Amino acid sequence: MTRGLLQSDKAHAQARAPALVTVGPLLDGGLLHSPHHRDCWRDGGVLGVADPSLASASTEQLSFREFIAQAYPRYGFHRWAVVLIALLQAIADGQLSRLIVTCPPRLGKSLLVSKLFPAYFIYRHPHLFAAIASYSGELAYAHSREARHFYRVTGNQLSKDSAAVGNWLTPQRGGCIAAGVDGPFTGKGYSLGIIDDPYKGPADAGSVRVRARIEDWLKAVWFTRAEPQFIDAGAGALQRNLSAQVIVLTRWDHEDVIGWLMAQGSGDAPQEWHVLNLPAIAEHRADRQSFPASCTVEPDWRLPGEALCPERFPLSELLKIRTRVGSFWWNALFQQRPSPMQGAIFQRAWIKPPFPREQPRRFSPLVLSCDLSFKGEEHNDHCGFVLMGLLLPDTAGPHTAGPLAPSLSWR
Image (cartoon, rainbow, N blue to C red; front, top):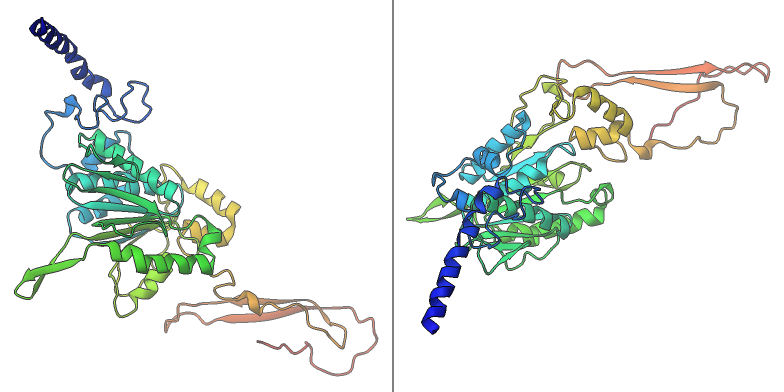
């Protein structure tokens, strides 16, 4: 009787087995919350089981662009994205180790850098770790969750004993860790470090205290957790090790993380960053930002005045945004050229309230007009200053001889 039960159970299990196999066609796309299926991981509901529809896929490694097309089929490969994808490919291939990306808000930088790229890096190097940090642990975990999703939907397996959002592993014991800036990375190491928007907003970016705390965390925790760039190859020689840093943000303040790193780039131990600076509207070559000699800069492919991503933000829309936000925030957030709150040329501290006068003022108003050139080159135009005043009606009788205008005291 026992034998009969076993045969019956075996037959029953065989009858049920095809139910798992038939899941494959229903898992097309693999996107979370897809209306076409209820299995967001494309694994038949079991983390350790790969999607049967991908079992016969080619074992040849995908490029990052091919990986994106498979993981996120509706991704738009706009020109700026193609440039950034090539740089991230160079990081995955071990040809680039330091990358800074500055760009306007709502461009799609986080999807590409903090969600798709960690998944691709771990797909290429499943024995290594990627680390993601942002201004909050919640946001870093959200990036890691999506990275895990893109890793899975491309047919890659997770380790069964660790698939948490903030710390997930591959069977080869690599994986992804995530935390907020100033968060718990001690005791963990990584080969790819991604910092995406370390500041919550202008208040944090403009706070000396917050900036100092983040800089201390970078020096004491973040950079000390990274794998070394070079290792011993024997006989006194060094060989390059796969160790990369990617920092991506929209700029708020001239003394933010980028400003701090650029100041270090002029010091004794520069990190030799490659900079991809993406202003919303392309600038003339003479007006583009300058960076330390230790940095290399990705050239802007656009003509002056062209929009960065006209498919999403055409020039007419950018001009409206510039009018709405004002020149200060436009230059910082959209042109990646923040200036000090106290003023870059005319400092706020110089502007004084009217000083007391012993005699009535003879001019109303006084206007100082300046035509300035700050490039400092030999053949630039001179600076021009004109002080103009409208003479008030003479209501106090004849004035004694004296200067036409009150003396000005410059401080």
